[in-house]
Image 1: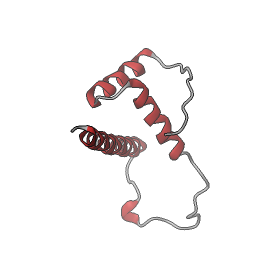
Image 2: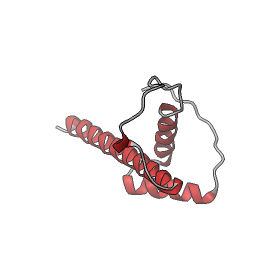
Image 3: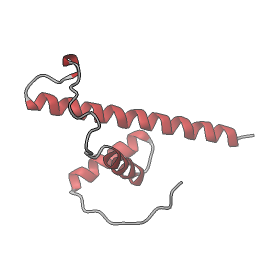
Length: 101
């Protein structure tokens, strides 16, 4: 694992409450939820696309008002986080089972 640094963040109470709820539901720490969000943000930051000049097939282009597209993005983000949590939980369970006699 990479070396970690301690830092302080500013977040409103409602956001922290929601993050704590996620942590409790998934059986992980608040810090882990925040790290996962930071990791996701770093991995998905906007870069100059390598596909400039190419368009996706029409069936892959979201159609609808901006609110529909935003909801679809949120669903994709939630799906990514759930899948990552599932992988991490499975890895932890596998490691735990390997340590037991």
